[in-house]
Image (spheres, rainbow, N blue to C red):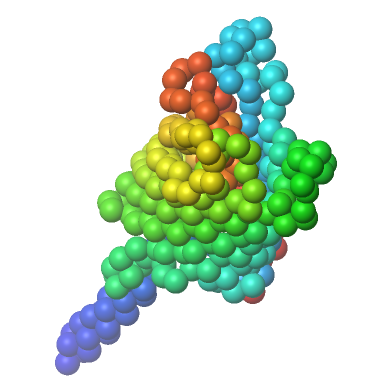
Length: 283
């Protein structure tokens, strides 16, 4: 009788233990953002994230003379994101070269769990951005509304094996005003993959395929270029650090599609890094 009771207790313990494990969620190695794209990984309720993104100059432009772009003029973005719930956050970002200010929010519809009841993580990010440069950049017929553009990003990610994770990001951007021979509306699809070397470190790659979809230009508008990125990410409970090599030249996805005419080649690659600092504790 005692043996049966002991077996019953062990069986119940294993059952509840497995149930607790299966209810756990899966987080992506791209914590918060991957390079300049939003992901489905959110800050916990009550936590504030600090972002610093740094793009150096082209590695192949002056070679060793500027330490392969490290000593060249750099572009920087800084920002904050606060989690009001585990699935809703608001963020503000400020970028140096184009003086772009972004105000937006993210909402997560689903987070992948171990039981596979939720097979993927899905989050939507919507933002309004302002170009804060001097009025002269907007021409003679200047209106305040000309400064704005709008971005929507839908990120879907899945861990397909213990060490492998995949993500897609669909991005749509609309500009109120653009230079001649430019598209005013863009769409892009980004494919990303990561391989976990350890619990804290992973290698990742991504390719972004943008297309222009609307233009009022009288001439053929310049087509946006594809972006290839290779990098590594290092995670801790309070930090996420990414170092990468990319032919992207603009930190803002919208400005990337509008202004980047650097194709995928070794001379156009540049070194960049992201620092993501998580402040506060989960409430």
